[in-house]
Amino acid sequence: MSSETNPPSSPEPIQTYRIHERYCSNLTGFVQANGQKFACRITDVSPFGAKVEFKGEAKAIGDNQTVTLRVPKVGKCTAKLCWIDPQNAGIEFLISDAEKGALEDFLMNVLAEDH
Image 1 (cartoon, rainbow, N blue to C red):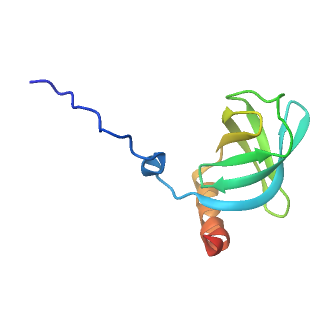
Image 2: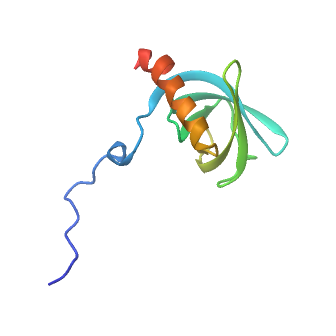
C-alpha cells in the first residue's frame, strides 16, 4: 500500500497556508539596499513579512538580499527579499520574537480597524 495520496483537484489558495493574518495597508516608506533608497507603499503586512509596491523600478535589488525597510513614524527593520519583480517585492522581517509580538499588537490595534 502506497503512502502517496492524489493531489487535490484544485490547489488551495495560498492564504490557507499562512500562519498569521495579513493586514491591508497603505503605509508609505522606503527600502534601502546597495546604498540606494527605493520609495514604496506597503500593500499588506503580517508579523513575519510584507508585500511592498515600488513607486519606480527597483532593478538594483536582487532576490535573497538583505534590505532595510523604513516607515516614517513607525520604525525600521532588517528584512530579506524573498521575491521581486519590477514593481513589487515580498520581504521577510528579520526580527526577534518579541519584536514580532509588538508588530502583531500594532497591526491588530491600528491596521485591523481598516480591515
